[in-house]
Amino acid sequence: MPTILFAAKSERWSIYEPHLRTALGENGLGHAHLTVEAAPGDVDYIIYAPNSGLTDFTPFSKLKAVLNLWAGVEDVVGNATLRVPLARMVDEGLTEGMVEYVTGHVLRHHLGMDTHIQGQDGIWRDDSTPPLARDRSVTVLGLGVLGTACAQALAALNFRTHGWSRSAKSIPGVTCHHGADGLNDALRAAQIVVLLLPNTPATDSTLNARTLALLPKGAVIVNPGRGALIDDDALLAALDQSHIGHATLDTFRIEPLPADRRYWSHPQVTVTPHIASATRPASAARTLVRNIKRAEMGEALHHLVDRKLGY
Ligand code: NDP
Image (cartoon, rainbow, N blue to C red; front, top):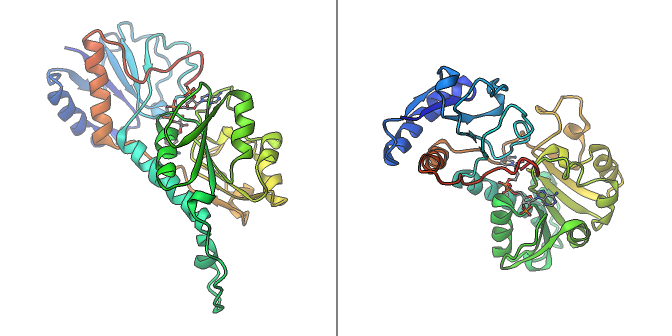
């Protein structure tokens, strides 16, 4: 009977417990001991949120795997006390939510919605018909689970869609670039850029003074990825010079974003409070339990994190 420790903020337990118990039952693991408290030496699996306060995995002597509740693993991937496989969260609800956020914000900028929402001044301007999506290029940086789903949705809306990843990819309807040179090409093509890269040493400040300068004048940035993907000073300078037309930012180097940060008041910035998408307990519980079942059957976990690459 495996012991599964749920290590997340205490309020998450009552939300997740019923879904986890249902999923355990459905997967023939109804006998598992699912708990928020256990002697470390008894624990086989930890369902883990990095803000749980658990940082030392050393006492968990028979631990088989850690299953992260979040897609981003930057707060746990470098933990030297963690010596067992680490799986990140892939959840159909999380993906669906991200596709909705990204297409919504891309369409807002593509259609120029702000002009009419904010500028209702009694003047009938009939000269602002937006171009068709087929005449607008959007680049998605990061073609993993979330980036690929978003790129496919944008391509389905007819946007000229480009994507960029570390390794080469082939996605129907998406012009795929990879590697350092690929980034230059992907950015030169982009009227709207969506960042869906993980936060790793290699992705830090992917958008910086040099790379921002590659974007066409007036380009729009949408960042639901991670705050560290952008050099903030470089972005603010590019916004001030109107080289960048707008930035919709959901993630920040410091969260919550401190009240004194210029992003809050900048007229060309939209701040959303890290709400682009969230793990949905019912579908996430099924993902977690299916992975535990795989481990119990001696199979490799899905969505394993490469500790060297950091994602
Ligand atoms: P994946 O691990 O599935 O995909 C990551 C993608 O980034 C891959 O395509 C990978 O390339 C690419 N990549 C990684 N490093 C580099 C690099 N150095 N150069 C170029 N490309 C690189 O992640 P997900 O799609 O599941 O999630 C992406 C991120 O979204 C998460 O890490 C998290 O930070 C963020 N997120 C934000 C949320 C929010 O609410 N704001 C919610 C959920 C996630 P390759 O394919 O070659 O491996």
